[in-house]
Length: 295
Image (cartoon, rainbow, N blue to C red; front, side):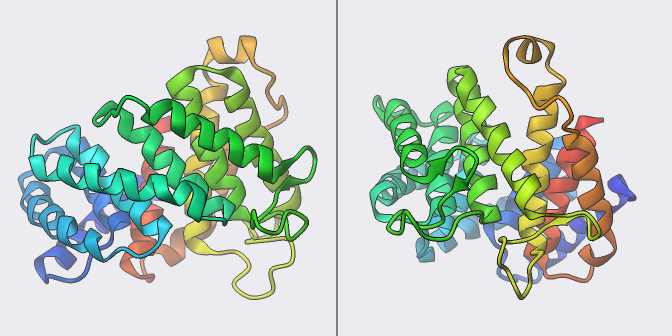
């Protein structure tokens, strides 16, 4: 797993796509932004500025909760290093749309993404009631979807329906980890770990070193981008496990090795990352960068 080299190669692909005026989604732009923050090179800056400007227009065409959440995450992070008012205007436009999704969206993973995007935006855009309302929405999601030992239901309108989808568990775990960072309430971090532990028991394919999409998945059962997203959640949990203060007060899975699981997924997917589309390659790059930052 040639981490730094592969990250640089993916960055070159994104820069080339921007130069060709190709459509570049929020995931690829987030990777480019993270890479720029780490290296601060003129080449990346020259690509990032017009790419973000085009992204500000492209987000108007977003039609799904997941797409809007991805754009909001990107603009939130970009606003931490840029004073461009257009970023804050886009954030102010996307937050109400995603707050509407808290009641309109019924797929657990997508709803968790919408909530987490709003939790993360509080550092740069903080309407008075956003934080408590987002926390309330997350707690309502958990109350409606979660059963101890059985994980999360997939569709809130079918409480007795299918359970055990990878995206639902990883996205909700990510939202809980963001809620923990915002509030320092231990149960959020502990439940995030419990959801990942459920996914590890129910969906892990040890031979392939990857998660299946669901317990009954038949085709494309080990989705590339979803496993990359899972790596990022695993890295966040690994960082928590290395926090002495957290370990001393939280109940943690003593036998868990999230860093090792993340490494196995990355190694299993490394050879195929370059030949995939730009969005998948960028998802891999983000996961690889998060893993590298653990070192």
